[in-house]
Length: 251
Image (cartoon, rainbow, N blue to C red; front, side, top):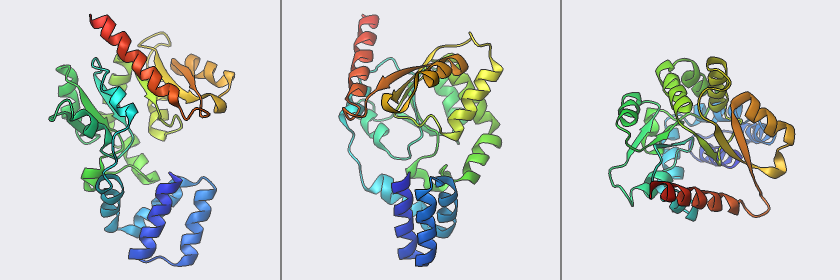
């Protein structure tokens, strides 16, 4: 997040422009971890340049799918992939298997419902799609308020997905406001033993035993520790193992 905001500062200085003093204040907010506040100001400062900035960073750079994305493709029993990233990596990877793979955002509730009812695989970009930057990118405090409190159909759909399907969090920020609200909503709406158990791959160097216990007791999420020391190589191994188990189960 910090790197993205610093790119926004550079873009604002080159195009708006903002003063060096204001840029320094944004840098101070970033260093203090006040990302949402910095994002709100920078998005407002960029104005009409914001959409072009998002496309340049996340689309025109044409990032290449990684070995982990290739491993995901072996999970042929997935119902959906949900991501908070804006980039096109997931759909570019899946289009090597299916050129017409369905890609939705929080604006496409009808299509999400249809895909779920037909058991057709889809990708849901929960915070927006860089190729549709003008149709909503969730980045600022105002954006989060909009999606959390003014999009009830979308929130209900997410609750349905989390209460019907096992979700595995890979590389996700478990402090994301939208994820936290959804988990708390589900925990408060359904009985503690209702619904599937979920899993989260989290950095073992940054999580305590107490936190792991609370994730399961409070949200029915089992933590799978992965090490930053190995640059998270275990994540790819984990996905490969899931794929192998899925293939064996389908045989």
